Length: 484
Image 1: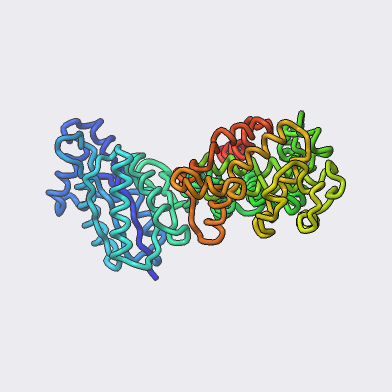
Image 2: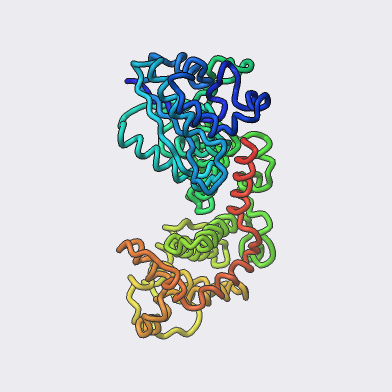
């Protein structure tokens, strides 16, 4: 299949008797500016043709002649009310005639553009329109871009749009150097994805801000082969945000020394919560690992809410509550439940409830539970954990339990049922997502009673300063800009 060669035209794409316009004008100012000069040549083309010689473009045509079936040349023809003395419109007409005579087996087209040649935004829109028209007119074609001429803005805008609208395999890019005045060198093939890399880097930055590390990793893999610091950190973000901690620990071993020495990576490798593990948390949790697991959930909650993803934020918030309650009950404060896993704890709690072993389940006067008014199915899960965890004496822990009770349906059924327009329970929102696919808007999220005040209090309790995902993202962006 023959390819289509496309190019901008500039002031150095033709010579007259072996000299460029700027050199001729130094000798004779009367020849006028480039537009005026080429207009005169065009009007007298039959007489002047033998003195005219193309530059740059013809070298690539000769080099790729068997591969080219069509050539499209973009020329500038700006409005009369702007400076347009360097416009290439008449040059395009001249070259169209010259090339048609020289290469009769190749189709040549001259496409004029009236866009200002230094207006980046307008040029991008104009080239987008032209390339889409080209693709519609000549579907399934491969292209060659020749950097033959034009302003810097024309060159960059055309390349950006080509890389945006075409797959990398659909076009090639060539540069034709000048070996000396009036003599074009051998065409050099150039990388055709440099602008795409910049566009991808911008997209990667946007993706990671939304915790879409996997999507960012796929974008980055299109440009990079093998392992790099960026790809390793994108994998780190992917696995960490999915809370695949054990899998990620093994991957850290494959990182280079420079990354391993970064405090975030170093702490994560040993599941060390770092500065989060201090004060009241040391009294509740004898070892740091449970605090690591809990804070990981709260970090994700904070991050998803900060970017406006309230559905995912609700899921992570519910997981945070469940994780905290599950971890706090197996620390030995209540001997019967020490070191039990999730399922063992659940079984033991429900057994105690069924057997009415109130000394474990609840140690204060709560007649509605003792009288059996709450059936087993409703007390299963977070409610039974909260009731049991109240036996652990610590003021911050007790405040957390109080906050949890405020937002869980079980503890205020009538309050939530009687005020659906203003009050929604966290588990109601979570169940809507999980069982009905109903998303959560900011308006619905803020109907969770006192949720903003509670979240800020929890962040203080767990010593949150900068969210580590923000820190990770800053590191990735910095490495992208360094080309690493």
